[in-house]
Length: 236
Length: 231
Image (tube, rainbow over all chains, first blue to last red):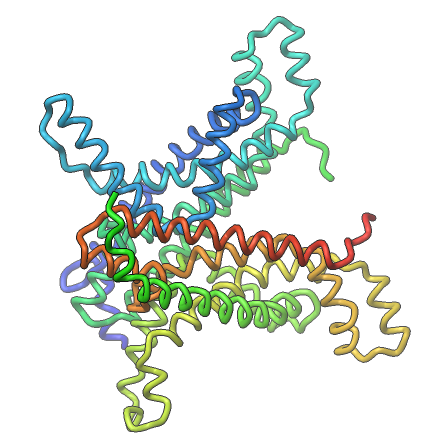
């Protein structure tokens, strides 16, 4: 057992480096997907609250469907559909088809899924901001856009933070699903290392510990951010 | 769109569908059962049990389910062949099959998530009600069974519906350990027919339908249980 612990070491024959570069990919994909998800979520929430009826209807379909289908199925569907749609587009424009890197594809696919959850979190947070605050902004002569980024967004952050923190934890864990499609990240790196050394228990435990560390550190960071944003707010 | 494969594979898809339902029902049931003590000891149990339960919830909620599943199937499964005489024992067919590992992994995962929910639910039941029950002379177990548990479940019922939906959406992971549930069957069809979208779209539709059914069932149950009084 203790001899096999050497397999986790950085230098060969240890597989530590593989796991670390897997972790790096996981974090890159998670950050990218989270950022994309937040963007979709913000626009989606604005669209759901202020948009015209067809847009609202479209967004409701998007959030409902995405949240009802297993992530694994979505990843496969979006990955194949997305790449072939892009290549069809490129072909019709007279370009050669391209091979989309796992990193970009992973970010786009997970970001699109995150967007649906994030839309709901942001929508609830926006509705929690008292109407009077945005009305006051408009009364001061701010434009609609100004009232959104000066008043609405800063005021909704404390309401959105717990939900958004949760989404971050979900996206870091969801990156593991990309291993099933064959992308390189921590879970697939672990799978390769475990398979080639035949030390499954050791490597999967190590991966679990790494993911756990990411989660625990994220909790600390979000706790700190939340306490900053709650300054000046009445505590319940 | 090419759907000509559907009649040929419908039997396989239906058997996959039932396997998904089985996984969902068995794991939800066992998971909820385990979640009750996990939540309860964090509210009322001795210190060491509460620490263990909290650690369990943190680990389950802090690691991907896929890793938990692989850890249990490949990792723990790797230990058994080393035990002498186990191949001859009556347990071997169970230990060799993938299904029990999936049930174990999903059950533990649900217990972790729902245990956290139940902790809040147990803590949220007004103290006076429990004191009244004790004053009536109920034993601790009777207090739990007649007052504490029903009141706790009543308060978090909508959340439990959400957890069942999450469990449904986790079942496709079982396909990665050779369990041919609905998603696994669709993968099989895709490999046989070289069709990319149609089998995936079909199972996606079925999952949406199942989610809808779960929401409707839980909504109906929710209407049947008395509403918690608003304090």
